[in-house]
Amino acid sequence: MTSKNTPLEFQSTGDQALDKILGGGIPARSVVMIAGEPGSGKTVLTLQMLFHAARQGKKCLYFTTLSEPALKVIRYMQLFDFFDVELLDKQVMFVDLGACVREGADRTLAEIVARVEKHEPDFVAIDSFRAVGELLRGQGAAARPFIYDLAVQTTGWGATTLLVGEYTRDEYPSFAEFAVADGILRLGSERQELTSVREMEVLKLRGAGYTSGRHFFDISKVGFSFYPRVSTPADMELQPSAASGERALLGIEGLDELLGGGLPRGSATVVQGATGTGKTLLSLSFLMEGARHGEKGVLFTLEETPDQLRWIARNLGWDLAALEKQGKLVIKYASPVELSTDRFLYEARRQVREMGATRAVFDSLTTMALGVPSDRRYKEMVYAIAKHMRGAGVTLLMTVESEQLIGTAQLTGHGVSFIADNLIQLRYLEIGAKLERAISVIKARGIKHDSELQSLTVGSAGLKVIKGRFKDLRGVLTGLPIGDPREAK
Image (cartoon, rainbow, N blue to C red; front, side):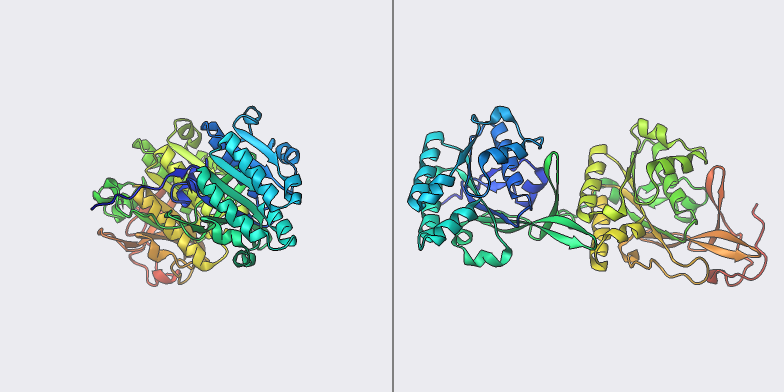
C-alpha cells in the first residue's frame, strides 16, 4: 500500500520577500497569530495582505472588535497605496463585532459563523483578538472554550484565518490562542543608539520551511516592505564566469600587470588605504574599464554623493553621467547614519540582478561599519556581500580606510581581509619633503602576482603604476625609506 503526501498550499502575502521568509507564503486554511505591541503595524500588514488577496479575486472578511471601529480603520488605511475603495463591500468586507462581544462568547461566535457562511471568504481576520479574549476572560471561564470552538470552526470554513492582537512575547505561553494557532508572526522594534529598526520574527508556522531569526521591514506609503536578514546564499555554486579563469581588467596602467592580467572574474577584492591614496579613483577606473568593454556596473557609495563622484570623474575626463544614461552604470548612495544592513544588502542584490551588472563597488566598508551595531554583525554583512555577489557572477571591489598615514601599516583594521580573494594596499611613502603614493598586491588567491611595492601616480588620465621606482630605497615598507628613488621612465 502506498501513500502520497499532499503538498502544502500557500497564500501569497503580496510581498515577495515576506513570502520567501515564510517559505512560500501563509499556509492555506491555517490559523495565524499576528502579534505585537501597539504601533508595530499589525493592522496595516493584515489589511495589506487582505487587499492583495482581493485583487486576486478572493473574498476577505475583516472583523473589528473593541479596539478600533471599522470606520476609523478605513479612514487611516486610505493613506496607503494598497487600499482600493472599489474593493470595499465586494471583495473586502468590514464587520464590527463590538456589540456582539459584549453579549458573550456564544453570541460572538454565532455572529462570526453567520457572516462566514454567508460570504464564504478565503480570508478571515479578527482585529483585535486580544480585546475579545480579555472581555471573555473577564466574564469567567468562557475564553478558552471560545478559542477552541473558533479553531474548530475555522477548520471547517476552509478559510485562512488571521488573529491580530497586542501581545508581548512574555504573554505568549499564558494565552490559549497561541497554542491553538498554526503560526505566530511577531512584529516589534529594536532600539539602536538614537534610532530604532522595525523587525519581524516567525515564531511558529506549521508545515512551512520558514527562515528563522529577525527580519527587518519598513512601513511607507506603499505599506510593508520586508528585508530578509543577512545570510549567505543557499546555493553556493559559482556562476560560469566565476569559475572560467577569465579576468576583469581594472584599466590602470601597470596594475593589471601586477595581477598577472587583471582580477579573476567573480572574485572579491578589498582595496585598503589611507585617506587620499586613490581608493575611489581605483574603483571608478574599474567600473569605467568595464563599461568600455560593454559590462554594466554599480557603485554603492556611503561617502561621496553621486554629484560629488561625477565631479571627481569629470576632472579626469570621465563622463559618468553619459554612462548612466546609457544604462552601463548606476550610482546608489546610502547614508551610513540611516543604514539598515539587511535592507542595504537586499537592495544591492536587487539592483545587481535587475540591471544585469557584472561589476560592483562598495565604497566604503569603513563608513558602512558606522551603521552596524556590532563587530560580528559587520563581518557577517561583509561576508554575505562577498558571497552573494560571487554567486551572481559579479566581480566585486570593496574599499577600506586604513588609519595610519605613513609608517608600518596593519591590514584592514576592521578584520575583513580574510573574506576577500584579493587584497590591494595603497599607502604613502615619505620621500624627501613630500608624500608619494605606493601600491602593492598583498594577496591574490589562485593567481600569480607581483607583491613588490610600486609607485602609484595620479595624473590627468587617472592612476598609473610605475614599476621599479623604489628599488634603490631601503626601509620602504616602514613608510620612511632611505636613499634616492629611481626616476620614472
